[in-house]
Length: 337
Image (tube, rainbow, N blue to C red):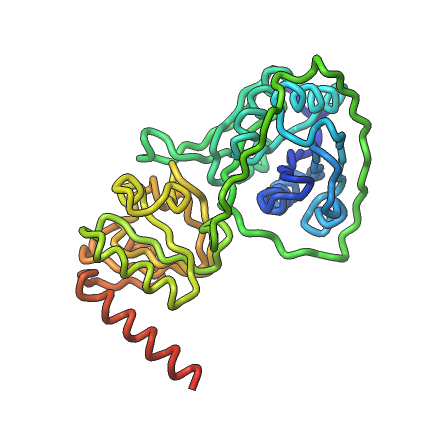
C-alpha cells in the first residue's frame, strides 16, 4: 500500500500538574533518532491543563514542532475527554507514527485513539528501531512470558501506534542550536465530553531516590535468601548514594515495594551504574535495564548476567557483600581525609 502521504512522528507528551514528565523528553529524543532514519519530522503534542514548563525546551531535545492543547478542564486525566481532544487534533492529518508513554494514562489513551484512527497498538515497548528501506518503525517488546523479544511492525496500516516504557531510554542532551515552532491549538470541550466526575484527590506518597531517575542503582534478586542478608543491599546503597532496586521475587516476598521492582512487570531504568547482585539476567528483568555500566555478582559463572556485565564477579553474596561494604567504607574515608 502507498503511505507516502502519511508524514511525521508524533509524541504524545505526558503532563502532571502542568509540568512535563521526564518520559516526554526521553521519547522526544528517541523519536528524533527514528525521524532521522526515516526522513521524518518530530512533532510533540501536549494535552492537559495550563502548561507551566517551557514547551520550547522540547525543541532542543529533538522536536521540530510542539503543539500545545491546554484547557483548565483538562487539569485531571479523563479518557473520554482526552480522546476527543486528540481525535479532533488528528482529524485531517495523516501521521506516520504516534508514540505514547506507557504510563497508566498512556496505556488507556493509546487504544482509544487507535480505535478512532482504525489501527492497532503495540503495548509496553522496550526498544525502538527503524527499517529504512520499508519506512517502518520496529516496535520491540518481551513476549511469551518474557522468554523472547518480539519485533512488531505495521506494514498495512497507518499510523503506526505504540506505548513505550518510561525510563528505558536515556534523556537526550539539549541542543540549543536547534530551531522549531511552538503552535497553540484551541480546545473546545463541553461537560458531556467527560466520562468521570472528580470528587477528591488523594496525593500519593513521594518516594525518595526513585529507581527510574537514579544514576546509580543497587539491585538484588534471588541470590539473597534472608531478610537479614537483604539489608546489606540497603547498606551498600546508602554508602553509594544509590537507589535500591529489585527483581520480581524480592518484591513478591514483600522485602521491597513494587515501586522498586525493575523489569517487564516493574519499571524501566537507565542509570549510569547498575549493580546486579544475585540477579540471573533473565530477559524479563534485563529488558528494562539500559545502563552505561553493569556490575554483576553471582555465584554461577554461567548465569546470563555474567555475559551482559561490564564487570562480572563470581562470588557468594553472603561472603562478598560484607567485604564490598567494608571496601566502600574505606574508600569513602580515604576520599574525605
